[in-house]
Image (spheres, rainbow, N blue to C red):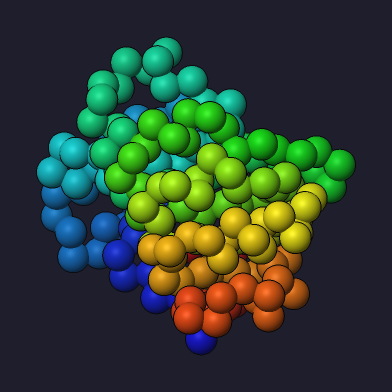
Length: 179
């Protein structure tokens, strides 16, 4: 099954640093913030999707508390084209617990040690692309404890974990490079 991306705008960061967002039918979308470690997209002047790295420090950007009401987060190790390192464990940042309304988290280009910080968030969707799990057993147990989780999108880096997960969850294989 291929992922349906109708509710997520397509974003491209080009070499010049220019951000191009295809909002589809949405007329009131905007790029609210573009920094080396995060990009914030909004609809009707309210933040809706955050692309961030674990090292992002939101206090330095003077964004305001509205950012903590986003529902979708894409967490990447870096926005550099070659950012993945097999030997580098990227911890889920503690700031993620400040986002109490998150429904969808996409973990992209990361080596993940555990998911303890996200287990109590109201997540309905988890996405895994180009990930390596440092502790597969613990991660499987935590994902299986997430009562609200309805869907997992994944690529080949995560497909071997699927048989061990709660089969009431819908699994969507990502055949393309984006979310």
